[in-house]
Each structure stands twice: as C-alpha cells, then as structure tokens.
Image (spheres, rainbow, N blue to C red):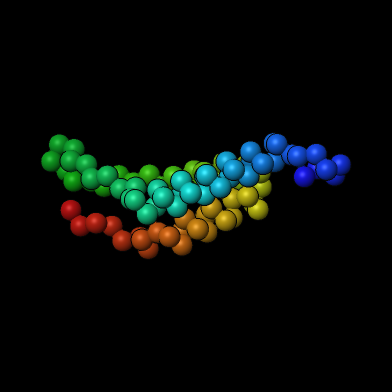
Amino acid sequence: MDVLGQPDYRGFVTALIWLALIAVCVWWVIVGDLWPLNLFGAHAVFGFYLSWLVCVWLIMWFGLEWAALPAYLATLSGRGGVFPVL
C-alpha cells in the first residue's frame, strides 16, 4: 500500500519477480548445472552457475539487500561443490 492507501502495483510486481528469481536460482542449483562434454576425446565438465549471474544483476539494479537472500538460499541448497564422477 502507498502512503495514501492506494495499491502499489509496481512494488507488487517487483516482489513477485524477485520471488520467482529466488525460486529459479534455488531450482537451478538443486537440479544441477553441470554438463559433461566430450571434445575430441577429452572429457570436460561445463558448469554454469545461474545464481551468480542473477545475484550480480540484482546487486547492480536493486542493491545488496535484494541479492543477499537469493545468493544465500542458492548456496545453502547446493550440493557443496561435489562434482559427479565421469
């Protein structure tokens, strides 16, 4: 609610997008972000940590307060750096 009692639509949408980004960051870490590659006989594991990219974007646009919770929850829900054995 606004100061005059009017609904704040922009704030509501921003909060919903923020909650969705938190869910995506946690889901990305739980599901797994590592892809095994076989390039010319060499085995490699490619990883993309989406949570880092999202949290840097949140820090740049909204500040540390908006990025701290997604970063913490994504790190907390992670596998602890254990990579699958190929």
